[in-house]
Length: 193
Image (cartoon, rainbow, N blue to C red; front, side, top):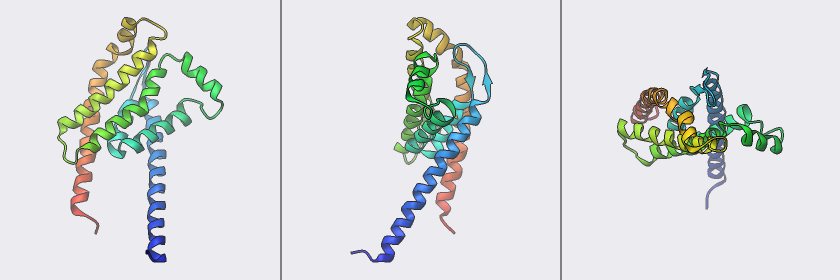
């Protein structure tokens, strides 16, 4: 049986872990919001740096917390879920890019989990993880556009215009993610002081 001080210590550790997770979610959602403010206007889907932020946060925070950060961004900054469910459902039904918004937390989860699957990974695995995340975005985004146009048209306006820019964003995210993960690995090797 555990002593009272051991129970208190376990409780304090759990509280600290939950507080840290909440902080990560809030900071991640804020970074995604900042990324969403950098916009190249295209119709029907604009180009932003928010996908860079989403995938970078997934690499840093992992699948579960990265997806929660993305959900926080969507509920607080993007989709007014807090006002009324009826308004939110109408928003998703009428907004052409809603498929991409739905894909954000799922793509963040997939990228984060793929990175968590391997303790030792190569830069190629990092790029493959980001590529799979982009495929999730493209698939759900194109499906969302198909409510308003044909399959061919949704591919022409919802995927093809973004391939070049997303390729550049993927490489940039891979470089930044590799830098972060290498710093993190060095910190683990040194251990606490």
